[in-house]
Length: 122
Image (cartoon, rainbow, N blue to C red):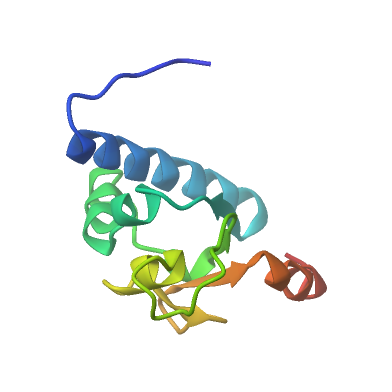
């Protein structure tokens, strides 16, 4: 394991997105899907569509969010439109299209959605 210190949240977000894109490409080549569990806090804000699009461009790979399946690991017990909702934070700039996803966007599930994904063979 390697500990990296970043001088700003913006640089941390860039590194996070570039790392996710790298691993997503490897996973999609290997199995056709990229599974990702994320916590709340500042992580959803770092995963903006702009940051990810820049990371895909930096990695010289096409944007392939439709092959991403994201699980909200600490989804709060608040309504989806609450300012404290991780789902809302991820939805604000189009990173996700809501539960079940939309074409061209990743799919996103709360913990209770895991069974549905397993039934599809993911």
